[in-house]
Image (cartoon, rainbow, N blue to C red; front, side, top):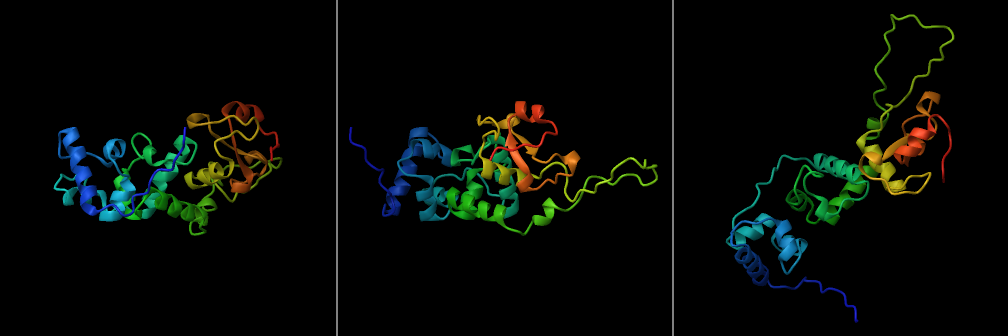
Length: 234
């Protein structure tokens, strides 16, 4: 069997793209359908359509079809990035175009395509956001609620004031996942969903901070077994 690369469709005439949209509408026997439906039975890709006409809805209008979704223009880039954070954590890995749907995603693919042009560009912008220093203060901002100073403190108690919250932010969780992948650092098994645990290498109770260098991905079994033991697989 001879393997061949799929053809790129940069030079397809506009009318041919519009005709394919109409063909899909005829096949579905309706003038309204989603980009995901087109992605499944259309001849070309959503990225090709969006590059040519700007947005999915503009392409539908140009083809004489009905718009499937009204875009919420008030959604900020940060809100879209936070949605990718939630998807990344839920899936335990980099979300794909087909993952941008309920229950993983709050927004549709249309929202990302209209803002960034393609899903790949949206992910590139997200990684730039994750790696930026703009929101570092979010990781070292508010500590755990202050203790009631009116309560007596025993002389034997050792007081340590953390610079970070005990629970990592969604953004920090994604940074850990991007570094470790969805693999337990101790046994190497793939972890997803509720089986992903973000562990303090140096325990929180032993003055360990909630920062990237002190966090690692563990499976539930190893996180529960680890307790305050300080070990890390490099």
